[in-house]
Length: 264
Image (cartoon, rainbow, N blue to C red; front, side, top):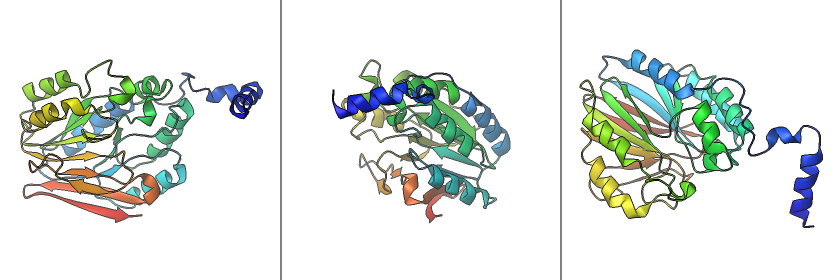
C-alpha cells in the first residue's frame, strides 16, 4: 500500500475525520447567502449615481488573511459591498466553505461570492450552490449592472457551454432601465487555462453589447494584473490572492471609474 493510501486509510479510521470527507453535504449555518446580500446591495444603492466596492479572491487556505481583509474593509465607511471572485475552498470541502462564509459574514457591508475552479472539486460545486446560490447571477447597484459569471469550463468537463450564453442573452434582453453602465466579474478571464478559449471571441462580442461596459474583473491568477485582453478597449483587472494582502477597490460615478490597489 502506498504511503498516500495508508494516510487516507488512517484518516478515515480516526474518530471525527469523516466530518471532512470531500463529499460531505451536511451543511450547517446560513445558506442562500448571495440572494440575501444582493437584496441588501440593491436596496442600499438604489437611486445612486456613485458606488464603491472592494474585490477580493482566492482566499483558499488563507483564513487569517481573509479575516484581516474583513477588518480592513470594516475600518472604512465608504465600501458599499464586496465581491469575492472565487476559490474560497482548496479542495471543495464543506468545512472550507463554511469557514470562509463565517469570516465574510463579519463584514459590515454585504458581499457576494463567485464560483472558482477549486470550489468545483469533489461536491464543492453543489455545496457552493447551496450556501451561496447560482453560478451565474447579476444585480443592479445604483445605476450599474454587475454581471457575475461562471468561467470554469475545464472543471465542468465541457458538459455545458461555459460561459452561459443563454444567461448572457437574458441579461442583454432584460437589461434594467435604471442601469446606465455595466461591469462583468468572473473567476478567471476568458483566455485563462480553465476557460473555454474556443468561445472566447464569441464572449468578446457579447461583452461589446453590454451597455457602457466599464471594465471586467477576475481572480484566479493570484497576482494583480490589468490588460486589454482583446485589444478592444475593455480592461480586465485581475485581483491578488488574499495572501498578498491587497484590496482592489473600484469607484464608479458620473465621471467614469477609478481603481485602487490598497495594502492591508
